[in-house]
Length: 90
Image 1 (cartoon, rainbow, N blue to C red):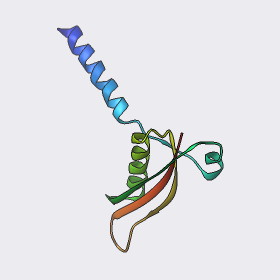
Image 2 (cartoon, helix red, strand yellow):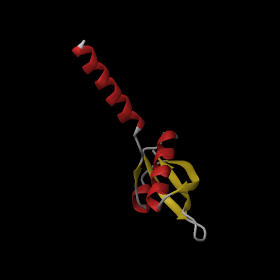
Image 3 (cartoon, rainbow, N blue to C red):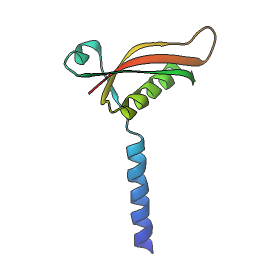
């Protein structure tokens, strides 16, 4: 029984690590040597600029990108809701 519990715990940790995969940020110079896959955008992200860029990273990974370059991030007015756009790369 102890062995089964350890195996199940290991499987859960492995599954959690796959779900936390995110694309890596790059700058304009690095992007020049990579293949563009298009762009992703997010809106109404509550929190900070870091929360918005994290969502861009996750969305890029969901589209099969290994890297992303933030094109713009903004919050309109006095709001804590952020929008952002990133180009994604392979």
